[in-house]
Length: 275
Image (cartoon, rainbow, N blue to C red; front, side, top):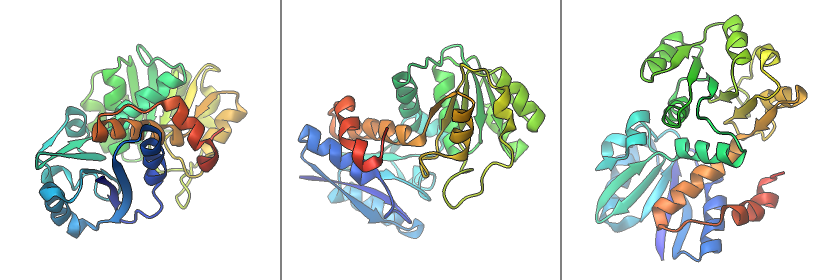
């Protein structure tokens, strides 16, 4: 029985064990999955212990996603581009870092019937999650991504890394870009339980009726952004879908086994309150 963990601090609230254990039960993979609190000052020792056979891999959550990168032997292209790792696989004593968020987002959009090729996107945020989104959508052929962030400098820095990116400024710019977007993605913590919310959601009124609004926040399930978009008749996707999709990608990296995603959603419907 090979051991997997989700590491972070705090980490007890993580939904990763629920999702990963459901996939282990479904596939019969010879793994067990547990929570392990790892503080930033313990991270180097944890990685060394894992390399020495302590575990087969781990998922990485805050505040360790960026700090773990220089401690690994290798990272994939997506993780390198994002500067953050959320999945580590131990192979022959080497620690390999991956970032499954971007591919998870593309899988989620495909499940919703949304093709990002040629799409115009309004992206809220310029941190690690926004970088993963921007990288994935650019790779998938999005025509234009307008980045809006409280720190304009961070938005400019992110936009400068990818062709076809622009910087959205104030509320007027948000409305202008929303009116010309097929996809609006919130990659900030705004609206998350315990965090501040949006000051103004009126930019959504400008979005075309065919637009999709995707909020990476999954607690609460129905954020103020999603509620406002629902009220306007726009298609909405909550962050719980990305959480599941990126976990599926991580599980395949850990085990080499592809779970049945449809069966997984059925198994998680009640415990995660899926519709």
